[in-house]
Image 1 (tube, helix red, strand yellow):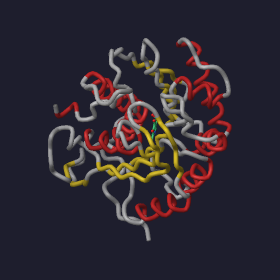
Image 2 (cartoon, rainbow, N blue to C red):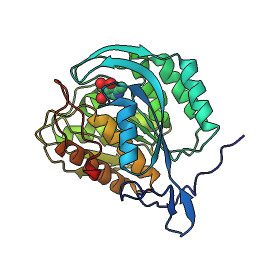
Image 3 (tube, rainbow, N blue to C red):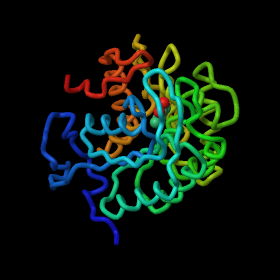
Image 4 (cartoon, rainbow, N blue to C red):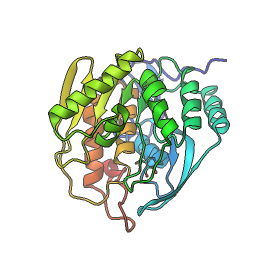
Length: 301
Ligand code: PXL
């Protein structure tokens, strides 16, 4: 049975939560009543809540969408390092996703850490049943402390099924290099060239409309590049001096998914997501002895 519609898909929605409204429904631009957009995160579990589904849910709440989360892998970690990754059984992941999809229709889906090839294959197979739902793929491969968060088979699935299905992909510089099989870019021109190569790979897989956001957060000039169709657009970033950077990529991709669900145009969505992450970095306070989390609730503080 198809799930009930939540709201008209193309309605531009107000940001209920971010504006402080507690109302579960609000008017869209057409003046009709619509409910809260629903955004699903398919990602890993970080018990320190800086990254993974917990960070995603905090981001969704801050940006005024209703978040759901299906876990792909457990990690054993604190702010200091990832000690261990425990992948979930792919059948459990599919069952969870089916269970949710029988109940609601998603306005956007964010895919983050997948852990291994078996889970990645199950997720992209399931996504075949989610036609028309925008998918933001954060191609998570390694933790900032250097632990593998995806096995080689999983990386290959990102390059094939991932590039074929995603509407958006948000690699950082290292992930861009890994996906395209080369070196990480060191300047804007190289970033544009490698992003073009990634787009060519997506086009070869029948997906020329893939929007690529290369996040430069790890560079001293943390500018982001949006490549869509043949157009390159740079979003200048502000360097924030802080040790609280754990989960920056997760937060950016889930903020992007939230803004897409709210009806933003691509440029607007990237601007809003980047602004949200910058604010969350600027308002972060030290937590733990390692790389601490962002302050996801900064809009309320
Ligand atoms: O930041 C990448 C990342 C994504 N997802 C989970 C993580 C991490 C990094 O540690 O633990 C669950």
